[in-house]
Length: 240
Length: 240
DNA sequence: AAGTGGTCTAGACCACTTG
DNA sequence: AAGTGGTCTAGACCACTTT
Image (cartoon, rainbow over all chains, first blue to last red; front, side, top):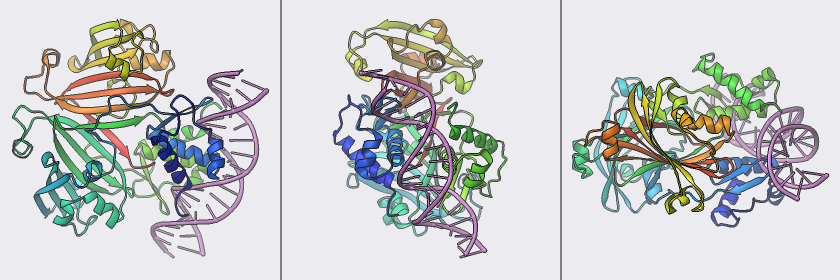
C-alpha cells in the first residue's frame, strides 16, 4: 500500500477547507458523498474526518452533518504551537532562524538524566545549548540532552540548522509522544546575558521529554523564552 | 446502544494497566486475543487501543506488539493538565478548593468579546472574577466570560462550587475543543493584592476560548497563577 | 419519514518484525 | 514462516435531528 487512503482523503479535504471551498453555514457533503467521489468506503472518509476534527478544522454533529470550524479570534502570528513535533526552523522559516552554539559536548549522564532518558550511566549523551535567533534577534535559549546511541554523528553543521530534520529525514526516526511542562520563572544570568532580559522580566520556560514511536526517550530539553516575544498555544480536543 | 463497546473495552484495559496487571517489558496480548475475551471484533479493540495510545498509556509497534508506556520522570504532583476539560474542583478535589467571588455581573459584550464569543452586541454575557484557593491558600485568579443564552440561571451558589459540573451535569452540554495560550507576565495590582505576588514575581497566564461540540463558543477566560505554585502540562501525541 | 453521523462485524490483504 | 498491528470493504443497525 503506497499511502493510507484516509490520509490522502484527509489531505484533499484539508486543502479544500483552507481554500474556503465550503461555506461555514452549510454542512459539508455527507460522508457517503465523499466516499463515492474518492472511491473509498464511508469508514475511510469517517477516519479522515475524525483526524481533521482532532485538528480543529471541522466538527461533526450526529444527525445534522459536518461543519467547517470558525476562525479563532485570539489566534495571533506570534503563537507557537506547544503541541507539535516540528522544529523551530520549520515553524518560523529556515531563512529567518539562526542558531548560535553556546555549548556542545558529550558526557556521561548524571543520575537525573539517566532517569529522564532511560539510560545506563555509561551511555553517553549530547549536552547542547543553543541560542536561537529570529530575524537577527535573540529568541530562545534551548538546552537539549539526547542519547548518543539514538542520534549518531551529530555535528555543528546540524546544530546550526535543524536537529529535528536530521532525526526525521536522515535517521528516519519518528516522534511518538511528548510530555511538556510550561512555567514562568525569574531570569537567570544567561537570560540576562543572551536574551537581554531585565532582572525583573519574567521568563517563559518549557521543559519536555520526547519519546520515539518505539517508546525510547530521545530528548530532554529546557527552553527559555522572553515573556514579551512568545507564548505557547495548544489546540485541545475533547474526544477519545 | 447503551454505551460504545470500544469505550467499555478501553475502560477495562485502562484499569488493568493502571493496576499494573501487565509487564512493561512484554507486549500485551494481541488485539485478536482481547477481541475474543471481550466478544468484540478486532477493529473494536483497535479503536480502544488507539484512544489509550493518544492518552499516552500505551504505544504500538507494527509487527511487534503493544506495550505499556513507561513512567514519566518529570511528572510531579503540582502538574496541572493544560489539555483537559475538567474544572479545577475535579482536578484538585472538591473539598480542598474554595472560591471567592470577586466580581459577578451581567453586561453587554464589548466589540472584542462579541468577537471572542461570536455574539451580537445585544446578547448579554456573564463577567465573573473568582479567586480560587487550594488548602486555604490563594492559587489562581480566574476571569471568565460566558454567553447568558448558553448558560442560563447561573448564580453565586454555582460559582462557589463548579461551573463545569453545572454545564455538564445540569445543562448536558459537552465541550468540543479549546484554544489555549500560555504566557508569562508581570504581576498587576490584583495579583499583588489577592495572590500575594511580589512586584518582581513572574505570573503564569492562561487565556482560552472553549467551544461546545456544536461549534458555539461558550467560554473566554484568563487565569493568572503564581509562578511558584503551578505549571501547565500537556501530553502530546504525534498521530493523525 | 428521511437523512445524518456513530458503531460494529467478518473477512481480507498489507507492511513490518523476529525467528 | 509466523505473528504483529494497519488498512480497507460492504453491509448492517443505531441514535439523533429535521421535515
